Structures are given as C-alpha cells and as structure tokens.
Length: 355
Ligand SMILES: *Cc1c(COP(=O)(O)O)cnc(C)c1O
Image (tube, rainbow, N blue to C red; front, side, top):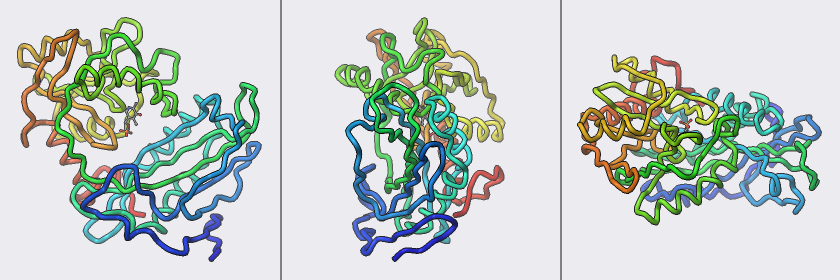
C-alpha cells in the first residue's frame, strides 16, 4: 500500500513483526521496529522522505562515509504513559545538537520537518512497538552519513538521513568500577568531542578494552593536555556529589553537551540543591572520596539516566564510594526524571511531547 502524508511517502510492511517483542525480555539494540525513515539530500536538496519497511540498504564501495567517516547520530527514547500515549523527551534539543554535529563534520543541515516530522510520523506508525513496563522504552536512533561515490577527501555533496527504532528494556548492571584514563584521550580542544560523530566512539574502544582487561567496566576521561581534570565517563557526562552539592565539568568543545546532564542540573536546582559547573580535578575528587566529602560519582546519559559508580581506579588504587541507597541524590534525580519522561508526574518544565 502506498499513501502520501505530510510530504512523506509511506510504504507499509505487509506483515508486522511486533509479536517478536517480549516486553519482559528485551536485549538492547538487537530488534528493530517494522519501519524506518529515509531522507536523501542530493546536491544540497532534500528529496521527499520515505517511511519503508525496515531492511538492508545497499552501498557503493566508494561511499565517502566508509573511507573518511562523515557520520553522525543521536540517541533518544520514547515512552508510553498509562493512557498509552507515546511520549518523547526534549526532542528539539536532540534536533539542535544533530545540526551542531553536522556543521562540525561539514555535513548538510537537516530541516526540522524532516528530523522531528519524520520521528513523529514513524512513531505513529510503529506505536505498537513502544513497550510498556517499568524502565522499558523505545530507543530512537536518528543518524546521517555521506553517500558520495568518490574517493577524494572533501565534504560529500550527498547525504542520507535515517531514523531506526529499537525496543530497550531495564538496565540491570550493578554499579561499575571505572578507571581514570591518563594515557589515552577522548577529545582535544579544537577537535570533535562536542559532536556525536561516529569516529569518537571507534576511538574510545581500544582504551576501554585495555581498561576492561584491568577489571574496569568504564573509563573516566581526563583532559587531553594535563590529564588532571575530569571530562566525561564512557559515553556519558559525569557528576560528583561533594558536601551535598553537585559538581560537574563545565561544557566545552571537548565535552558532549548532554541533554540528561542539562535536565538533571535543572531538576537539582528545582530541588534546592547547589550546583557548580567548573573544572573538576582528579586530585580534588580522589581526596574527597578519601576523607568522605565526595559521596557519589555518576554518569548521566539517555540510556541509563544515571549510572552511579562503585569505585574509581586511579594510578593502580581503587577508591571505593559509599553504596547507593534510595536516599542518594543520584537515586532521587533518576526517579524524578523517570517520572517526568514516562508521564507519571506533571511536567512543569514543558519537556515532554505527546506524539
Ligand atoms: C550521547 C552522549 C552523552 C549523553 O548525552 P544525552 O543527551 O544525555 O544522551 C554524553 N557524552 C557522550 C560522549 C555522548 O555521546
């Protein structure tokens, strides 16, 4: 069946696979919804987007992306509330950040009607795939890559923007042990740390593998110049609770401007918690853990909201953090954000969009 809606060409699947979704047993990133959104930018002109059955795409071996890595993405989540409405959280922030990443990678800007309009239309069609249940969501992955068939190094003239969606379940991991990385770096001033570009993640795999061999589940990245100041943790922003205050590295060109980070800071402010956005030195935090003034360290990102750490490894010593309880600040912030994004409590911040 072919229909025309809102300038999106829609071809629906003949047979839904939604019965493959078991809300009690979701393995992240392995099952994809019935449809995907595709829009091509040809010589700077966006063509009529399409929603088509999820499936393989063909590529030419000379695709610029495969060689020089012009590739960016976003990560967001959709939830169902009690009334079965589909809710998305601060999508305009992801849209804006996507185009900031695009600019840095010299890629085409994506119009709002394609990014947001495509997301909404795809979610309407595949709404049955948004799982209900505690901590369940539909992970949304908008991404774009260069499609020029050309081996010269220059910005591609053609791009493909796509959205795919994959059910996500409860995140069970126990608090990880993280290693302060003082040899490898994630980002340097003037580089691409603030962009959600594919290469940043490829570059992080090797140091993470070495840390895993030493028993650490995650890395705490430090600054590229002195390795003295915290930047991020894995693919999350990082926050510290010291003397009851939240301390977090100020955003810069080497730090991804997380939407969860911003949201948690605004929630903390509304709870009357003091916040400091500044440089945070490794020495300050290690000393704080030793004398008990630093009580929590956690990562913040869309995937897990907050991920509290059990211990921080620095120069061969593990500095163990107090156990997280229901009264921990990170627990309170996590619950407050979850309640808003799943529609359990009133959203006084105007963050939640009903599709
Ligand atoms: C995506 C990402 C984050 C978290 O951003 P959110 O908008 O909160 O999901 C933090 N750091 C890096 C490096 C990221 O890629």
